[in-house]
Image 1 (cartoon, rainbow, N blue to C red):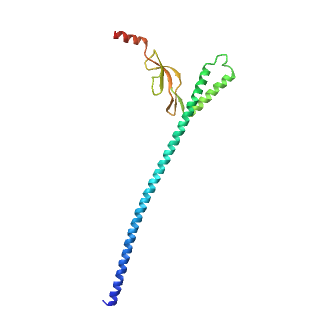
Image 2: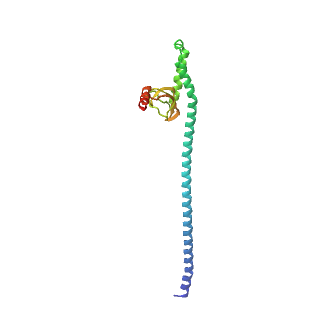
Image 3: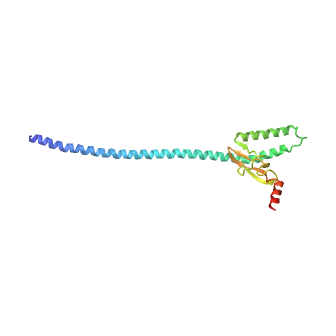
Length: 186
């Protein structure tokens, strides 16, 4: 090999080494940037999931607030419905034929239809078994034990949830059954 060839070869060697160093540094920089990009992507995905969860939670809270407001309004209208029903059951036969009484009957029906249209349901009571989740016993009388004898105030459910329990009179058993129990105990 001539001196010139050796010189060219020695000049090429540092260039090749330089290129290799540059390539290696570029690879390292690329891998660092890839790691950063993956971190940013993971952070963005978490933020997106958090936002979706936040959105769902606020929708649920909004719906629950609406249900509570609706329940509060219904609860405040129930005494008016009760008063109308009491008034209509106590109308004398002399007044029954008047048109204003018929108008009140229509108003009562309309109010009842509107409330039922919003999800209000009446709790059935008479002849049913007493259920402390739906009924509130205010009196006990002789009668079939555990059965509701009389409804004193109507109870209502709103969309399957108790709005107001029914006030009821519940049977405690008959006197004959009580006397038998006492005579057997003597």
